[in-house]
Length: 60
Image 1: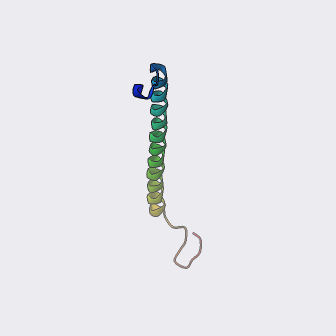
Image 2: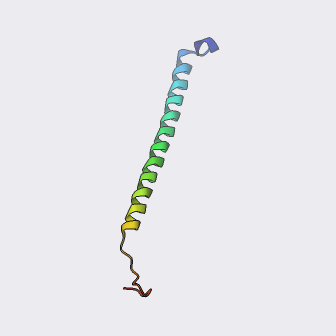
Image 3: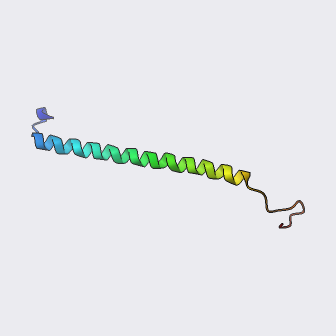
């Protein structure tokens, strides 16, 4: 970066910006995986829930 004519302060600010930006992307990715896991858990729980309908289609 010094070859581009940036000072040490400018380089530090640019690196801090890039690290923060990548951290936010990684945090968003973790939140995505969390919601995917929760979705699968809820899907399993709904599949395991007892039905409220009897064989004739009446409510229990």
